[in-house]
Length: 154
Image 1 (spheres, rainbow, N blue to C red):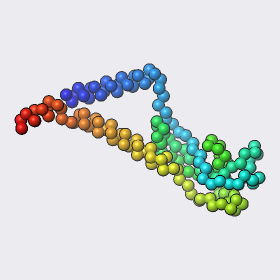
Image 2: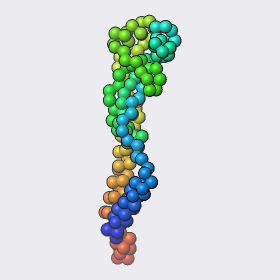
Image 3: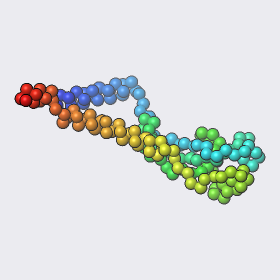
Image 4: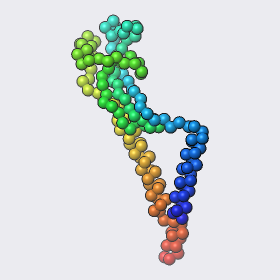
């Protein structure tokens, strides 16, 4: 019975894998750059770009993900935030000048968000544990025949 259960899971996996391949359903993975605003700056000439847009202070880092769940990320750096896809590189001296001009507090260090640092790892780990438990239970679990034999012996 154990072998037939394992064989059934194997055939189901292969059939599902073939169906996904035939349907050409992409599994999203790769790297993505995240830029998040952390401090709002006033819209004045000092903080205006050449194209007329204004920038704020943000943090930028790159995440590696599989099925939209991040499993690793780079160290976050402080940048000028323009929008979710555009940033301005700023040196530590420029950040100090900006903080003095705008009279705002800019943090010296920043980190990636909780979900980008740990959330994806936790979810991927739990999914892995569920899959391992399913394999363990199907392979080492009692067969129905063994369970009925034990009940009849008692």
